[in-house]
Image (cartoon, rainbow, N blue to C red; front, side, top):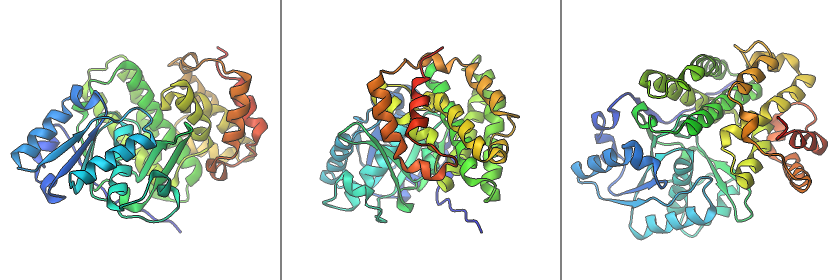
Length: 366
């Protein structure tokens, strides 16, 4: 038995916003435009969106205070602004952080009186319509219900419900051309981790998920090394954007493995890009899974022929050099935290505290 659910309408191609601009008017009467501090502007996506809203006579309010790894405080501030201005839909522009924040902001404002903590009760809450315009190619947030936020303790926490799927997503690879070299790599490796981890969880049970994962992994395997040497090549950008979307569709149905749980503290407390954090933890996690179920890993990583080949691919980008050695206190605290993460339930093998201690102690040795 398997299922497939994707309520998001996806429009893809150069100039896709202007070609399909009536969609903005179909989903509300006043927009809250949610962005980070720079990428939406630098990419041109914010200017294009505001021009369209003005042409359609759709009023809007701009909330451009979303930081990397958005905090509960930022989201609650955005929810207050949305409510005070009577906005009834959200336009999210940027990387995963603005998109994730927008989902939470929309839900908070639809359900008056709740806080960010209430998003994690497991309830199915309503949300105002969300339109997503990604400017990076990695998180797949444009086709998932997930929102990853950072609580007051600095811990990343994720939620998702059917109402927080974007109702519409616009994919225009021109908006990804202004990504830095580092962000281009980190976001693409984030997409790769989604594709691989999602299929580890799926294990071929859902044939559509398997198909999406295999295609996404193959594209990234083939295209990413070329893109890192030709970053202004729009055709290559389009391919990676497509692969990231496919990987998002994968994890929308499966979630991720313990590689994500292991990577979260590196992002939250060391400022390591999320995709890089995944890349430096995934090999150890997959090796442990392979001890329990080698065939599952062999199938999930196709077209990579072995974990060793996957490791060589990641090493070709020198990802290990991007992570510092950890203090013993960090190793102990993060191992305790990661060993209790819900991701472990979806990850075959005994990923106990000792496993994470070994993983974290191995980082920064290159």
